[in-house]
Length: 111
Image (tube, rainbow, N blue to C red; front, side):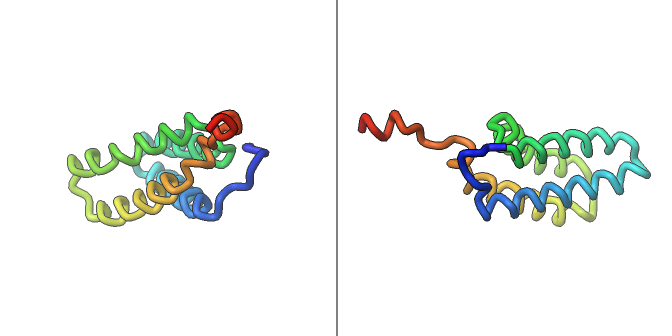
């Protein structure tokens, strides 16, 4: 875990949203076994976000940006719900960028 700082309050919204996504993937995996892969990937990203890992931040943003493209190819009545939940994850994550990429003390000292 990123021990130098506490997790920002707004980031908890993204973490809870990712938990909801993971639960949905797990539920859907009973009828579509391929969804277990999405559950595993989502769980790994969730743990990475919680621990403050930069790779998880970047991969989660990329996945959130490509989700609408995937939903366009599917004819699902849940598309609006999924896109809304996607924004509930993406926006707080973007607002928490400084948690993952803090300004270094060296740059501020030399400025």
